[in-house]
Image 1 (cartoon, rainbow, N blue to C red):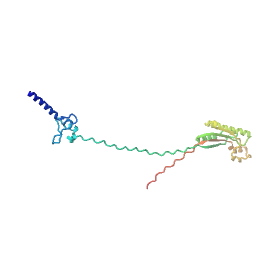
Image 2 (image 1 turned 135 degrees about the horizontal axis):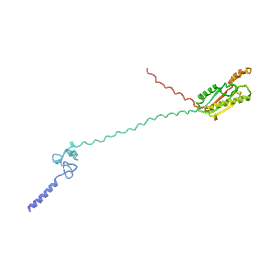
Image 3 (image 1 turned 90 degrees about the vertical axis):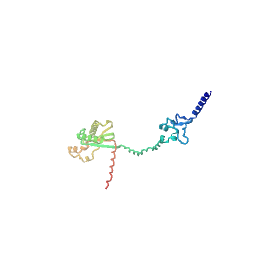
Image 4 (image 1 turned 180 degrees about the vertical axis):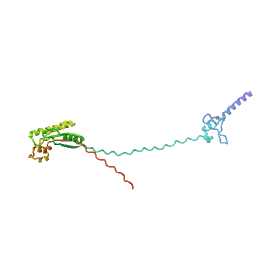
Length: 252
């Protein structure tokens, strides 16, 4: 009976002692002796943390009470993230001055004229020299035109012969010139022709005296045996010459 009571009391006493002993922390302060709240037990009078058998520097560094127990083992605090520099607003590109509008170039009205003189007496056909002159006129004067509005052809004769014969001959000369021009690419719809007979003589032929021999008079009146070709159209004015660049003055 006494032994039973002693064993029971011993068990109760052991339970009480075990209940009063500090518990080992399982997480926050592993490696140290902790109380029921998980706080590290401090050695009375020494002011140091009581370690248990599992203590290691690594556990001490990871413990919640690291700064309290082993401040020299605590990991250095993470530096605060560096403040990002304020982004400067992107510089706006300098606005280029607007190009000045080029002045509109208007075509100019032009009137071109050529006199094909020296046609054979009594003949409607253009001479070889007449055709050569006309070819140069087309290439150098007519072709550069912007537009061709009309081509006026007028046939002429000298004063020798009847008015009726001269009228017919002057028209035949105009037709010969028309056919030659259209054969060179001139639009026939733009061509107008007529015969003036001897109504518009060249002024210099006024000195041709009827008292001359027939041969001399025919030769003197040769400028009147002609075809006049007039072209009406438009042409762009020549482009202005660029200003010469000013060279910088040479330094002495």
